[in-house]
Image (cartoon, rainbow, N blue to C red):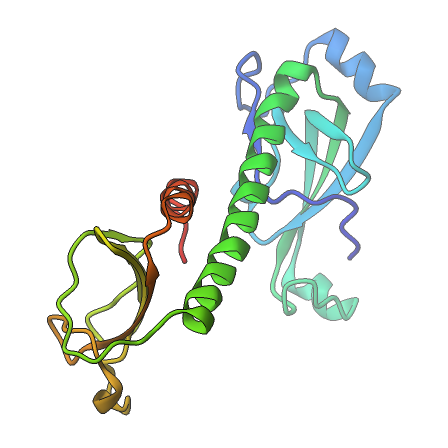
Length: 222
């Protein structure tokens, strides 16, 4: 079954209660001359409801006015060779929509801008890691690091990496303590088997950028 609109997430309009209640007459009139979007969902409570606002594949930000749903049984899936959800039953939703107001669209745009900023930040972090490894030095160890640890993904299993900023250097450190790792390469002392660290002289502009990137990516799975 073709899904004619993306619905990765939704924002409830504060002026419209999230219920299946009948829309007001002005909204219904807008929907009648407006837009119908279809969605397929495995569970009924995963579908759109009146007041949801989302970005359609054609770029418009739409608000749902009313919704009709239909259950597609397993027997129907088998009869029609329908493998939308691997042949399992699911729901089809037809949502009557209108163009979102600026106030309704604002959270959608904000969410999109945040996602774009996080994507750009992750790309920049990757560039800085490569820069420090390519241009920095890997001093003899064991070195005990001091200073600010940023964007750490280190795990108890000896994996992950992070940045460390001390009074004289910026470090990129890659944990190297997992089973099968060559621990003899380690020059950084950790609570485990150790890590491999590269450093460059302290660059205040780069240090500030790293701290800003860390703030942008706070809460993001790295």
